[in-house]
Length: 311
Image 1 (tube, helix red, strand yellow):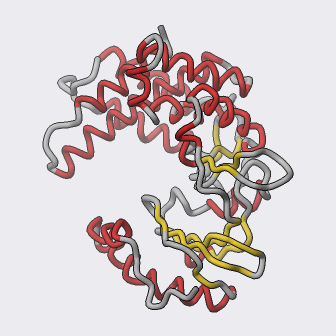
Image 2 (image 1 turned 120 degrees about the horizontal axis):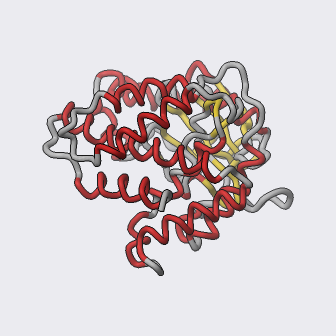
């Protein structure tokens, strides 16, 4: 079915309020999608979808049902097509075609079902089971995780002592972050960077795993970095879970590292660092946007996870 003129979802139109670059991205989307459909012989055949940084259009293509993804041009997503091309559909959605200049990719169409409703321990095991497919030797074009972590950790160290975080935990995360940023022992592997339950979709492929990852923010770095999103996502479920929040965090943590065969101490160190970085960004964003005081519930979650994996 043709969908011209293209009616962008409200969530995509709202992206224009993020600033001039985002407004320009939203303004050109209909033209870019139409041009790609003409060049790649695509026809829109479903409701338009979106994430935080991209429009996703279901299309009929010469290769069959597919998804056309046109993203915002940022450094996190710059090399997404390279990682997908390298994985070649092993553990990840298959890349059919790409136009990096327009931040566009044509992807195989997966099922709409993600891991959000799968028992969280089982979901952690599924995600961890995909790590071996993804964590291949890194491509030379990828930015390094250690370069990001070094900068983020310096900012964490600069938080005032009055910041609403346990000072000992901040100091521990700074020390660990600097050690990890200077330590290449974890190896230079392709890491997804944002591997959580909603970024794993079911597939009807007859070969390979029943679940595949989408939406990588690829970097070159330590695979142990990947575990933390499994702990902070679906957070509301842990309050009602057996044994309480901390026990729930530990169950997820050990399910993931055991399934993937990761080093427990190294994975624990990365969780502590990532959770304190998350807390720092919450404080920085609120101060920068003038949006009022930080979200105490979010800060409590970050601190609770960092402490739970060490108990």
